[in-house]
Amino acid sequence: MATAKKAAAKKAAPAKKAAAKKAPAKKAAPAKKAAPAKKAAVKKAPAKKRTPSAAFMKPLTPSAALAAIIGDKPLPRTEVTKKVWEYIKKNSLQDKLKRTMINADAKLKAVVGVSPISMFGMTKEISKHLK
Image (cartoon, rainbow, N blue to C red; front, side):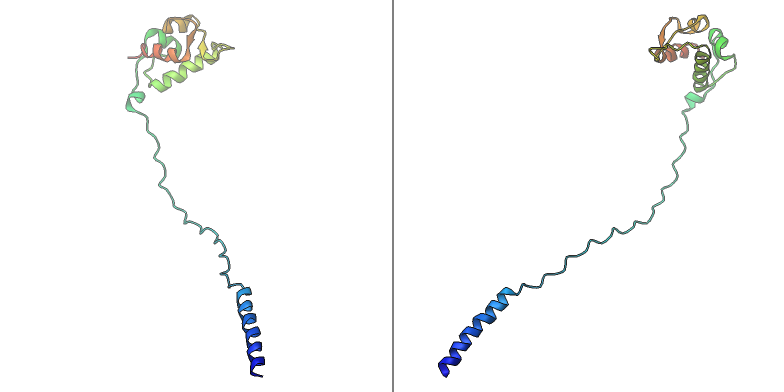
């Protein structure tokens, strides 16, 4: 009987070891990804309104040729540009195919010197007529 107990113990021991090996180790449950915490709404200071340069806002007196187009009152450069564009659009002086070119009429040609002229070159020529 002693041998039978030893034999039973040998059989039971490997079974216990095997059971211990077969049982998977408890894995930690996969951590659920936490929803990103809502960040507190950070209120930015309201953007400061851009103020134009004093040089752009200084009223300038137009020459006689330019005054025929925009009037003789002193105006800032920004307003001069707006008035010239109003004149161009009113008289359909912008080229139909190449929209960056201006086909100057007699009044505008007295200011810019050449026809056609690029809209970028036009502003350069107009600035010569402001004091």
